[in-house]
Image (cartoon, rainbow, N blue to C red; front, side, top):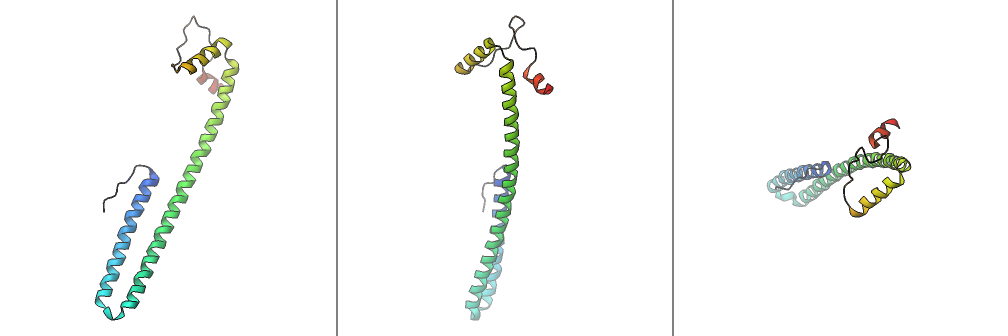
Amino acid sequence: MNTPCYTMAMDLGVCQLRNFSISFLSSLLSAESSRVQLDNSSSGASVVAIDNKIEQAMDLVKSHLMYAVREEVEVLKEQIKELIERNSQLEQENTLLKTLASPEQMAQFQAQVQTGSPPTPQTAATPGPAKTAYQWRNIL
């Protein structure tokens, strides 16, 4: 059974787990059905045994999936924490830059935001802040 696997860690893990689960269930069922074919006199007991094996296999798959999901949740929580910290840093930097910018620079910036044009590089004739954003970030 060919199923597409994805490059994201969670998708790949689920795909691998699914392939493992399918092959595991197949091997359980084929081993159990060979016993059933050999022993037709106890078919009722064999059906119960097959049901028990299927239930055990499904419980195993469920526990593996729950583990994979918990792991992915932890990774995502850490990423969210890092993004919140980065956002806070950028907000502080933005506030600092707004306080250091001249009214002309703020007007020019607002015009660029409204038109969607990229910022123009400053020349020696254009007054600008003494430090760039990168330099201010290193000072703080």
